[in-house]
Image (cartoon, rainbow, N blue to C red; front, side, top):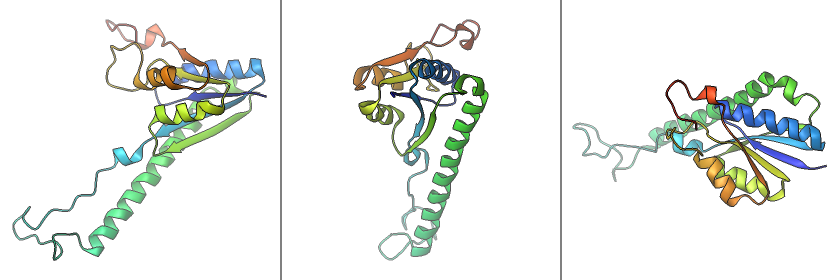
Length: 180
């Protein structure tokens, strides 16, 4: 039995890629690994503690370092943020799989959330023992005029298995916007 890896995010293109990958998995009697990867360390604010010179009347530790209490609070905040973001990633998979319940019915689906990895890196790594990698042509990135997003571009260039890039639907572009 083979394995098809499909990368998803919250974009309409990811839904189309998942539906296409599910149909292909059904035809091939393959396992469908649905992957959402994110890099939370880039999303959370970096550690920041003002120096003793940053604000009048604010003193940090003896050497200008944060107190142990400030460090503990910051680490707890960061851990809570990362936990919340992981929960959102799991919820995204739940939502996508339930919205495409018909498409994935009868297919052996493996859900995978990859933390602290850029999506392109995670998908390329997972492609090493996959039979097929499926991605949408564009995700949620800001350069909407590009035909391929950064993840699909990296997948095509670096994956260790064949790659299918599912094109976006013309209706997703909106009026007056070029095809993505």
